[in-house]
Image (tube, rainbow, N blue to C red; front, top):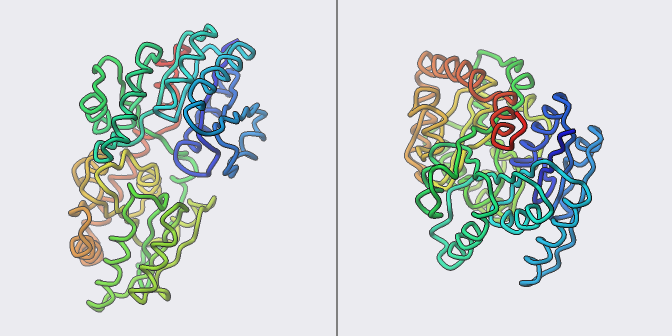
Length: 366
């Protein structure tokens, strides 16, 4: 019996935990036994979904300080010795080094780690510590699985690993949920825009908010939904108040009805910084057939094929983003053509089956 242990930081209803849930469902259908390890007890948004699948959820109490690291290795060893997984997939990068040490000592033959963001070289000392952890984990890690070629190239360059230690596996979305979205062909008045993303530093909702203010001042009022939760919520609320956009911009928090929300949009906007890794929400919007404007950063450029499947604009520029939004509404024919092509591309390339099989090959059970 093949048993795989998936490691997550928490069960927040976004990003990596959603990928893990998709993998777990697919692998269970293939007859694998899936178990989950969470390094933090909260948030627990997705816990009911994992429990509904009958997946055991293990949680470590790591404490604080330098003692966390050997404790993580020891607890990983004990868990793997007891549960005997054939392979371990770690979504936390850096921490994976100690998980890998413990797992290997317990006899686990394969451990892979997910790389979902650009190496944060701009953080100085913090990055040097991060790189040290990645280097420490190299002898015990089978492969670093990067969510895009853009991230893979940066991982090799900045973490100092070899190309053969990495693979690119695109993130996926539940295409059945998003491909069935039905949208009105008519643009609402005012047009409704949204961005789905964590309210964190590697996203750039503030540029989008400023672009909405520019559009209002230029005579194009828009309604904007910011969907997601995170540490920058209070900053964004203050910016919305400062720009007097409280009647136009809503922070909807973390939501579980993303397909339904996408069906109510006229435009999906993905404002991101260069350290964006992939953007699952971008793939979901493509699958739903929603027109897209996105920042021209490496990950968005790759996913949107250099602008073939969505309009790319200069990053961190409210003026450029406002101009791009206006262009989309001024040229509905080109906008529709890009959206149709994007949906076809997403359905071919971002399936859970393709992602799960690629992970399975690297983990040694496909």
